[in-house]
Length: 68
Image (cartoon, rainbow, N blue to C red; front, top):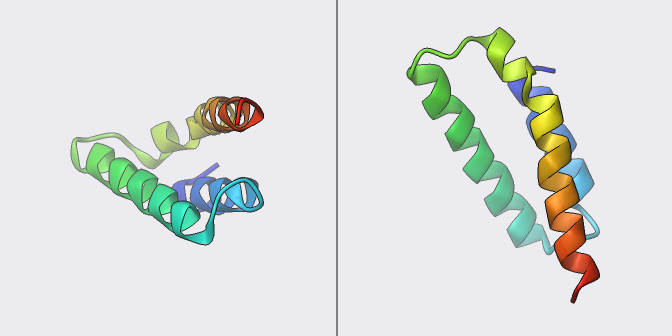
């Protein structure tokens, strides 16, 4: 998974759980994070490892919504 696929999947998974504004803010945050890490020297290959990271993010977010 590359960073664009990661961000697209994150956006798709968040829709329906949070407001459009929160979706945009989350995607922007992670886009900035990924870009910063790549500036630090991480490769696109390392960014592809974000798939499991995405799943943890979504699990955490969805778990939080279950308590509201």
